Amino acid sequence: MLSATLIVRNEEKFLPDCLDSLQGFADEIVVVDTGSTDRTRAIALDRGATLHDFVWREDFAAARNFALDRASGDWILQIDADERIRPYTRAMLDHELAAPSLRAARLRFYPQTGLTAYRELRLFRRHPDIRFEGAFHETIVPSLGRLVDREGGAMGCTDLTIDHLGYDGGSVRKHERDLAMLARQVKIDPDRSYLWWHLGSIHLEKGCLPEAERAWHSGIEAARRSPRRLAEQSLCFTELARQRLVAGASGEALDLIGETRSLLGNNLLLDCLEARALAALHRWHEALEIFERLAAIDADTLVGEFAYDRNILGAGALAEAGLSLFRAERYGESASWYGRAHALAPECLEFRAKWQLALACAHRAGLT
Image 1 (cartoon, one colour):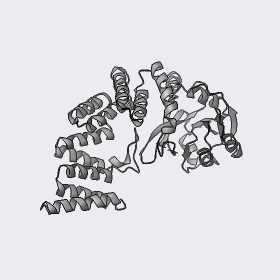
Image 2 (cartoon, one colour):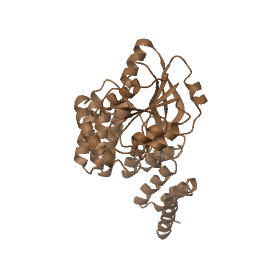
Image 3 (spheres, helix red, strand yellow):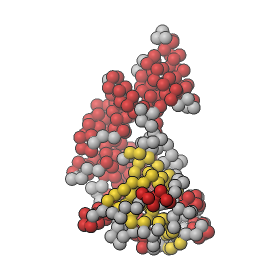
């Protein structure tokens, strides 16, 4: 038996599609309302969910655990109102979760339109010792790890897919709530660099770059002193490297990229940032080699440790190489890369227009 659990508040815009996607898939839908004043409660009841009330106390983990206590399934699917599952057969999921030793499974997760997928831990066996921790950016990972260390068990994967739509069109509506909660949470857990990354990202969206960079520096220091090596710890490094590139400090960006790799390994965003930095330094052979590798990756099938902007892969990587060369007034080479981008994505009018512009500039310069 599969129970889907949600915590909601004023989600009448998103909730219908979420619950509709679960119909016929989840055996039970548990909705915990934290104080809605719109039609959220009626929508949940109309679609057959069991509805419970929880007095909000600025603690996501507490609300999620309240929902767990009201679920009766063997397995829990954690989902939010602004998410929905893609069509998938229960027979396939049951087969993927059949091993008795399996404690939890990661599914395919698209955090925003325009980004690639990554693996997210959203499915787990209902167990009294598997609980959410953290008032903000709550997670079951610590409690699950303790259970596995004590009693054994395995982690699995499923091709079940969730699309998250809440950040499409921007996330301004969540900024004030998130900013206050993050400010409290980083004091409680200053060693979790992901919190510093999110805090800095909100400051950046609000136009406060100095505050953003201070938060990212704190996240980098947390990563440097941490005995654990987690992929998410690279986020503060990559954001600072991106800002160094914008400021024209390509050498500093390369230093940050090198440190990130030495501490935490590589990822595709680091590759992209390195290619941009190398191009800015006119180290063309190295830069174009990286752009070529990124162009060979299919964003539609990629499921990595991170979600990446689709534009740094495939035709987007070819176009970025074309742009770098165009800025350097290497118009003939730019036209070649833009032409390949257009051939790979003929529906993109931007690539076609830039290809034609590069060709025209090359012609005027006597290069064709």
